[in-house]
Image 1: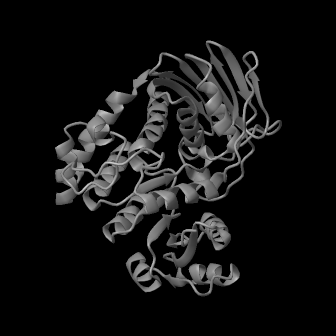
Image 2: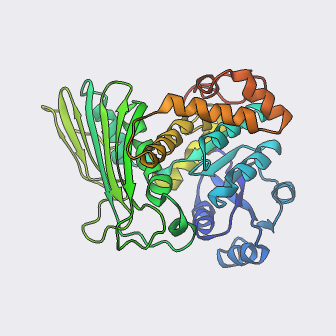
Length: 378
């Protein structure tokens, strides 16, 4: 049995508290420190969640040192993700970051460079990959031949006062990234381009666009069609969306929860019994730290899920015009190279030559200058 990984949780808000509760009994990791700019809040959360032996403070460096932490879980607000991730990585600590990794692709590419320079693991917690029925769907799709169409519908009446209700794109940026990422996981296919429109219904309590539709062209030639809203009273779907996958030899429908139906001869889905949601993220992260293997949500891979979001937002801003994701990545790369002020990060970015070279998946633990320790995908 492995020793539980001692971690510092950065962010003591509602989501931070949720993570701390999970970690108290988690077999893979344990909370030994809590960091928040609001020291009173962090202390209160430690007291109320009965982790009074955890070191509490406003400085990640100090808390990590005093607690003996071996890793960081970043649950700060999205705008602070890059700063916290870089601090943790430069301290020599692997980091598990809540999604979204970054507000922009340019920022995400800089974080890939930081991970390379420091040689540390940066993984994104796309926790909705970790559902047993989604794993079963993935296995089914792998046996049905060429992919034709994937559709997802997500409709919820989602009241979350705070930064989400102030976002310009609360659906696409804060929620759809889960669905887009899960599509990549389930199909093994990758996005090429997108046409998207977004809007805000007149009854919406969000300031930004809470509804959207999008059609992605995938590398295989298949299409991924998405529609959703975070301000949709009545008949809610699963948080994981409602799915239909059509392939050459049959189809599969998943309600996003526990109902997976397959119409393909005698084929029947086999649902595994793994840990789910955040617990799945923790297990994958701790396993990667122990083994040196590259987890599925390592930062390089996650950039493409973020690219789907940014491309959808960009297409919507252009009135539904087709946006080619490779072009968007190269524009983001040029911005990162032009604006990065850190000498080591700038040199690392420039060494790639292009964005695609920088996000090649299959390794972590680079020592800078694009030199990497090879691992296997987990």
